[in-house]
Image (tube, rainbow, N blue to C red):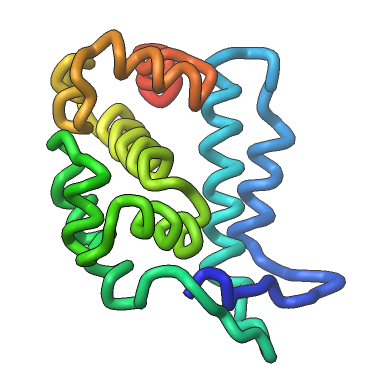
Length: 174
């Protein structure tokens, strides 16, 4: 349960992996568009590492509301398997046997985001992975990530990450 997690308090922390990431982050030229993308990726790696390795359970917290843990797992698995498909709020709500209104409230309480923002974030994350790993045409990446067109994909990508998908790919190619 994400709401039960908290970072461990530590005045000094010796973490070689994080130190390498911070050194890389400091060395980047943040004014360069391509390096801004690398900066963003490094920042995400730093946060991911902190969440995975420097957290513990929050003591004395009683969490109320939201979807049941098995419902969250089912939803995450279903969304990941269906990112290339158009998904509706009604379809997701039906998987939890809830009304759309109640589902949307419970989803937000569980994941911290409304369903459409969560879905967009997952699609963009998959797109980033595909852009970093391969040479698929941008239109194909858009379709594999559930976007209706390459232009819609490009607009959403630019809004979220501050660069076009092509620039993002180029930053990782060099």
